[in-house]
Image (cartoon, rainbow, N blue to C red):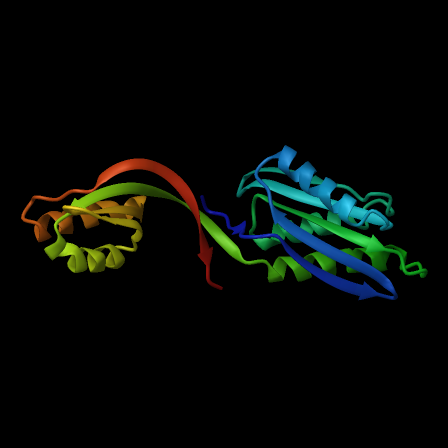
Amino acid sequence: MSYLLPLERTRRELVVVNSRFIATLAPVVSPEEARAFIKSIRAEFADASHHVPAYILGGGNNVVEYCSDDGEPAGTAGRPALRVLRGSGLGDVAVVVTRYFGGTLLGTGGLVKAYTEATQLVVNAVPRARRIAVHLALLALPYPLLERIRRLVERHTGEILEEQFAADVTMTLRFPVQALTEFQQELRELSAGQLQAEVIETTEMLVPVRE
């Protein structure tokens, strides 16, 4: 998966000539989830003048897009917000820009600028992540090797999710899929061929991307 994802719901606010533009961005993975997010913002700000939504599902060259002007002049709200999402490099993302009218008409150019800037504010603020495939694995090991194997896990970008102490130590481990093979090889060398982690599940997780 080549595109980035928003890690969490994020909100920013912009005031333009007394009109408030509240931009809320969230991760979404389906049209149903996007619609539920839009509905929740409408309910949260029920007295607002407009709720302008835009979302992109998927990423790269395989996307589903949606936007609406929600009563603003055609092309002044939803499309500018969607254009910012397209340029952000994010996928599986939805934004709603809520407007409280401030009593002064902004004109079509002013609206395009305000909705663009409000969306840019929240896009620039949201933490990003990448979805990667990971293996969950179990490993039983003797106590004398515990510290060395802890260091080995760390060196191969793995995580120790749990340690259970009985006659042996049983570790629950998580590794990026591509990292497990080298870990297994060094584990065999360390244990003279006696130890191997048992993969119990392959799944996905979000890994924060440091800008």
